[in-house]
Every structure is written in C-alpha cells, then in structure tokens.
Amino acid sequence: MREDYNPTRPLVMHIDLNSCFATVEQQARPMLRGRPVAILNRRTEHTAIVTCSYEAKAVGIKTGMSFKEAKRLCPKLVALESDPAKYRHVYRKLMVIMNDYSPSVTMKSIDEGVIDFSQSPAAIQDRDMVEVAKEIKRRLKTEIGCAMRCNIGIAPNRFLAKTAAGLNKPDGLNVISCENLREIMGKLTLQDLTGIASRNEQRLNQVGIYTPLQFLDADAVALSKIVFKSICGDQWHQRLRGWEVDDVHYDLKTCGRQYVIESRDLNRVEVARRMHHLAEAVGVKLRSQNKCARGVGIYVRLHGEDGGSASNGRWGHKGNYWHEKFLAPLPFYSNGAIWAITSRLLAHVPPGDIREIGVHCYHLTNGMSDQLALFGDALIREQQMTSAVDEINRRYGDRTVHSADTLGTGFYVKQKIPFGSTRYL
Amino acid sequence: MNDEIFLNERVEVIAVFNDGVSSCRPVRFKRKNGREIEVTEIGLYHPTAAGRRTVHVFDVTDGGADYRLEFDSERLTWLLTLEADRV
Image (tube, rainbow over the protein chains, first blue to last red):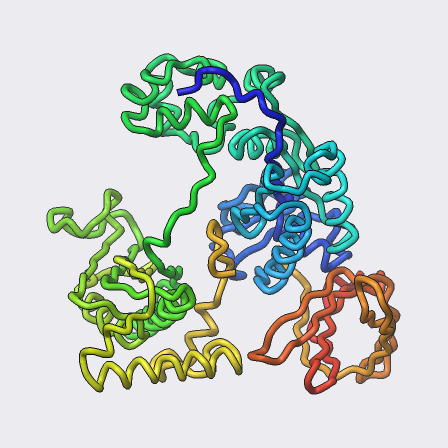
C-alpha cells in the first residue's frame, strides 16, 4: 500500500463533451444556439429530460426532471427528441481525434473518454499536455463544428483526471498533480467525487469524514475495515493519492432493455407485444456481442406504491416493482428462445396498471454455441434461421424482418442511446 | 414544444464537391413551391445507414430557419426532411 501521492507527471487525460446531446443539437441547428434546449427520449409531458443545454441549466433545469416541470421553470424551453445517429457520429469523430494521440484510448460512454499518454510515442508524450488539450479542443471545433465544447482534465490517474474535468464547466481545462492535489481537494465536497453519492457519504460521515481532505488523510485500514468493509477501501485510498486502480475491463454480465409504457390504460395484450419487442431487441444485442445466455429475467413497475404482498420475494423494496427470472439448463441466443421464456414469465405478472417493463438475459457465455448443434435438427434450423434474419436486417436495416406480433410496436419502442457502455455503439 | 415540421419533399439542390474536411456542401436548394433557399451554414453533417445504403444528412440553415437535407448515395436523390424554428 503506497502512502505517498503519485509523483509522476500527469499523463492521463479525461475528455468530456459538455451537455453532449444538447450541444450536438445546437451544433446541428444554429437557430437553437443560445437558447434553452432539452433532449427527451419521447415528446410527452411526463417524460424525463435526458440532458439539457447550459442555457437551460442556468435557469435550474436538471437531467431527470420531467418535461412538464422544466417547462414550468422555463416556458421558452425547446424540447427535441433524441437522435442517436447524430450522437454516434460525434462519438466516432471524437474517438478518431483521441486515437491520434495514443494507442491507449478508453471510451467511458458516448460522450466521454480517457487518453493514456503513457502509451504514446515519445514525440507526443514529451509535449506539454495543456497544449495538447488545447489542440484537441480546437480540433473538436474544426472537425465537428464550431459550437462543440469539452471539459478536459489531466492527472496521474483516471479518477483524478475525471475530477479535474469536472472543475470548471463548460469548456474547462484543469490539471491535478501531486503538487496541487490538496489545494483542489480542499475546494470540493464529498459528493463532488465520482463514486461518492449519498450512501457512501453517510458511511464516511459515520467515521467523522466530512470533506475530501479528511477522506484523503484517512487511514487505509480504517477505510477498508470500517467504512467500506471491502477491498474498495484500499482502492479509494490509492485512487485519491493518484495511483491507478481503475484501468480495468469488465466482462458483460447481463444484457437487457427497458421501456416506459406510453399510456396508462394499455391492455395486457399490448404490453405483452411491447415485451416481445424488447425480447427481440435483447436477442439482437446479445448476438452482436457474440454471446449466449442461460437465463432470462423480466420486471414490471406498476403505477402507485402499493404492489402486492412482499412475502413472495419477487417484489422490490418500494412495493411497485415486480421481477421474475428463469435459468435454463442449456444456453440459447435466438429471439424465439428468449421470447418463449419471457412469455412464460409474463403470465405471472400481478394485476395493476403497468408503468415500465424490462427484459434481460444473464449467465452469459462466449460464442454462439456450436454445442447447440449437438442437440438435433430443430436447433440447427433455429440457428440458421436466426443468422439469416440477422443478415437480412444488417443488409436492409433494423427490424426489416421481425415477428408478426411486434408489427407496429416499433413506433413506440424506439432504439435509444445506450448510456454508460459503448459496447453497442 | 417546438415548431419542427417533418417533411418528405424532393428538392433540387446545388452542391459543391471539393477537397478538405467537408467534401460535399449543399449551397442552395429549391422547394416544390418554387422558393429558393440559400444555405448560409452547415450545422452538422452525419451519415446514417438505411440497411447497407448510406444516406448523408446535412443539417443546414439559411439564417432564418433550420433545415435537414438528406442525400441518398445510392439513388442520388435529395430530400428535405425537416424545417424548424422559422423566425
């Protein structure tokens, strides 16, 4: 365990596009620049805001707020439905720019990424990192558009680089090194640190840690044995000191999709059709990652707080969240197999008005299972059918071929932006 | 909410093809009603896939409204698909 601060030159750069989707829309539509803009996944009053422009943030509009509430705060708010194709294009452009500087680039999500300059050629590594950051900002404007802005943070590790990127929004550029680490930490609150939300803050408060500086000075053993009660404590101890603990790759554990029902009075047959649509979408996602699954889980969230009896173990803490899953003996990956299990589980959904539905596959394994071929002609036919349908959809566009049951559901259940992971971009 | 009008209108377009970062640039287009629109800025260009077909999308403005022009690279057609925020 290293007690000192990482003294190496800051060579990790975190790049975060400012209010990405709203900025991209303002870039695409010059008449929107300087105006409050909100991006929604669906243009209804009760939908939540995915992101908003800085002009909207200035009047108190926040991500996650309902559009109705935001409109009350700012009657001139312009609402736009998200356009994933546009954001994917900007993501790819950003990635091209970042890849010019190092072979070690990690995209953390659709609007942020990390460049590790320690892997760069000497000619790039020897340059002043602040100058490189300014060059990236310039390239963003010339290669994507003049309205594009980003926050850049430079530090010895990923965590501090992300912290630095969040210091001066929008269009910020900050460096954290062992020299100014204590000064910067002194200006922050615990919740300003990525990974510290209300629960972790409470844990830290319970042992008398109320500021990032106290957190930084905390003993590694106390953090791991008392506060976090796991290896996370040691990791926090190292992370705060600028040592790298976050350069890790996580395997895909589950693969799923959710949908918020568009109308409260939708009957169960229609809900099942939307669930079928989700099951097909999950199948496509699963196969795009060359994975098989053994389990399928579904959930529904009902309107209101009172769901059913909490005694059967399928109800969540709030009482309006119900879930059920099934683990099959053999792996599968076809839409038909996923839907067969989903529809069986769906029969157990409790009564009530459904607000949200979701399907996910779990127990994922690599490869689209040649072993299935051992189990007979029916499975081989299913395998061939699935690859033929996937090929048609690749050639002529998504959902060119789909089950008759989901005819028309595509109008409601649209493909939206996958947050967090960049696997599906 | 917003004054976007979604269209599917064939338009005549004068475009410049040159070298550089943005190699194709629509500069003027004529609508079915005869109105001619001068493009003063290309906000964003992005390609989208319609199956294996590539459609090139140009979000443009004439300084008074925003428009979306789509060029189908296989059919060689231009479509006006959006008009918004007319002042």
